[in-house]
Each structure stands twice: as structure tokens, then as C-alpha cells.
Length: 438
Image: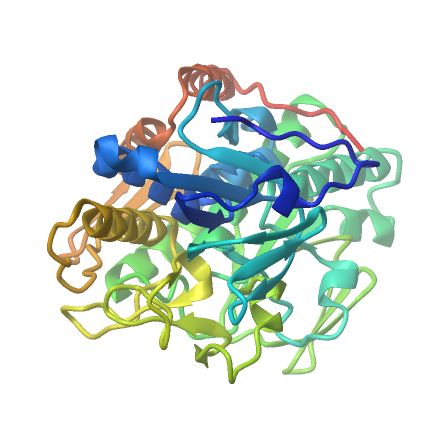
């Protein structure tokens, strides 16, 4: 099918470009793990019946970001282009429209975008999530979140900028101490991985590139609860804390941030942490487009769209919600499915098979069941942690190797695989990206 491109200064009505035909139109909102896994699986499952369907992807960026690796961009381990996987292909089985999604009109069965509106027969909502400031004053004014490649690049630029400034100040200068203090707020999976990688990065910058003693560079991880990575087993959580502390990271639990000011963090116990480098990994919330949908139109729980056992929006037979924006209950355990990349992929594949079976005339699938494959973390140079579903934990070098093998296998394109292997190989030789791009 045709790929539609638009210039910024042009405006077209999508209803004219994609006039309604005899085909059933399926619109997929978003090009993250959930949306793209749906598209790939749907094309595979529907087979020859694809000619009766018009598959459209609406997305603001025509690529899939491999989000589990973006923290490595922030710490100079990876080139940002190596985690961006293009979804545009010549003669593909779907239409791609790059546009800003402005509103979802479930009543009239259409999506309003920056380029006009488009009607649908079936809608797959896979818009993901955005960073959540949790209502903390100054969170996004003075802290850099980590949710996208652009965020990761900002963090890397900030770290390098701080070293540039600190290196020309005297060692007893109080500003130098603030410049060399790196604070990560949020001790979830992203937070602990970012903390471990930042510690390696600042050590490298100290030893090879700047006139800074590694003892001056301080990495602090703040977590509001009483343990790290709440979704992991208690055993894995304790092991993670031990590994990070052994590497020299200061971990402060039950550290509830009440406000963030310029170069300063205020905690609920009255203590103050001074830092020029404040990075935010404390929480996520649904895409603002989902927030615009009235509660009386679509049932929500904690802002996420509530779906039935087949991942259909409650009260609708033609709308599905998957990924971080959906509130999903596992059909077997009755537990809430966590908003993770692995669950998003499973949800996309499930809905793809469900809809394909419908068009082919096969029977309806059983309720969605989430398969928990455990948790894998990279916590720094030669240090990893694997928390299996049976609570068996592997840590250290073997955990680090397993983490790398599994993540490399999940990369789709040969170009990106080779790029990541090259970047990782250079990091073993203590060579990372140390250039600012702002």
C-alpha cells in the first residue's frame, strides 16, 4: 500500500486522501511496542483476507523506539539511531500517516489529527504513556525525565556540560560539588539501570577526559518507598540494592520528594540535596489524548482505559486498547497486567489474532493471559540481575551476559543489531560517546 508523506506547511483532509471504501478500515494509534506488534501479527495471521482490510497506522513519528535501551543513550553507551527502528517499508501491507493525534471521537467513529479527520471501522488504541510528575512542584521544570530518545540525549548533554563546568573550578568550590552530584529520582527498573550506567559513565569521564577525581563524582538514587523495583521479588530487590551500593551509588529509601527547585531537591524529612543534575524516572501516566476522552464515554481506572477479557473497550465491540494506556486484568490470575514492553507486545499479538480470527471466521479466542517472563536489569559494567518468575535470581556477570543476549535478540533490524554490537564492543574498551549535541 501507499505511504503518505506530508510537509509541515501542507494541510490535507484525510477523508479525501483515504475515502471510505468497501474495505474494513482498521486504524492503529501509535507506533510503540503494542501498536507495531499488533500490525506485524495481524498481517501474519489474516493471510489472504488482508485484501479485504485497510490497515492504517497513525503516529507522530514513523519509527519504533526500543525503549529498554534509551538509558544507554543517556550515558554514552549507544548511538541514539541504533534504538530507532523504522516502520516504513516500500510496498507494505499498511498505510502510514505521520500526524499529531488530537482527539478520539468514539461516538462518530473517527480520529481527529493535525491533518484532518479519518473514520474507522475498528480502532486499536496503543498510545502508550508519558512521564508523570506526580504533582511535585518543579519536577519537570528542573528535572529531566527519561521517556524518549530526546530525553536521553538531554541527560547526556547535561552530564557532559556539568563536567565541562566543574573541570575549570577549584576543588573546594561549592558549585563544583553540585555540578558533580547526579541524582536519579525513582527506584524502579528504569531508575536503577540509569543509576548504574551513570556511575560507570562519570567514572569514565573522570579518569579519561576531565581533571576530576572519581571520588568527587557522586551518584544518588532516591526512592519514595521502602525498597527498589517494586515489581521484582524481595530477594531481587535486596540484591539490586547491594550491587548498586557496592559500585558506590548512594541509595536513599523512603525519600519522598516534596519539591524540586533549581539545583535543589527538598525531601519530606526536611533534608535538602544540592545538585545540578536531577533526572526523573519516578512514574508514568496515560497519554494526554486518553485523558481527553470523557469518563462517561469510556470507563477508566486510574486514568487508563478499562477493557474486557478480550481487550475490547468496555461497551464497545470495535475498539481495543493495549499497552500502557489500557487497564488490563489477567484472564487467569485476576491480577493487573503491568505496563511493560513485554506485556505490550503480548497484548498486541493477542488482539491481532482475535481480529484476524474474526475476519477469517474462526472462533473467538480465550481471555487474554499475560505470561510473566520475569525481570532483567543491567546495573553497570559486567553487572546484571535476572529475576525469574519462580523467584530464582541470577546476578553479576552471568546476569549481565543474559541481559545483553536477550535484548540484542529483540532488536528487529540487522543494521541496529550491528550498531549496538559495535557500541557495546567499544564500551568494553572504555570508549563511549562524550560529545554534546545540544
